[in-house]
Amino acid sequence: MIMARINSVDPPNGIIILLEKEFLKINYDSLSNRNITIYLFNGTDYVICQTTSGQFCSIESDNKTVFLNVLSSTFNIQNGEYHISISSNFIKSNNSNDPMVGLYNKWILYTDIY
Image (cartoon, rainbow, N blue to C red):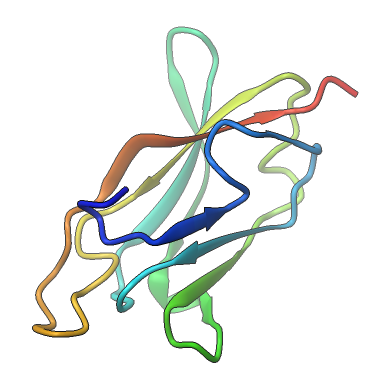
């Protein structure tokens, strides 16, 4: 996540989350208008569950944290494996305003079995 200039994510990578998780938080340098996409991995294929542009995310008062509302239907498979991808140019460097590298197959969440 360092190359993508992401300081932290909530929930953390590899954690088990409750079904119907309502939000994701990403702490970054500067926001752009590219996408965050949540995929369900079914063992062989990736199924898109939700795609959201940076324009539709809210930014917290620190101007570094993105708050993404997650649809109740996104994390809806028990014991599911979900991958979150962040497109290149979703964030920009605060210093130079240059687009930063995206994040692919690095942030993985698992839904609970209950």
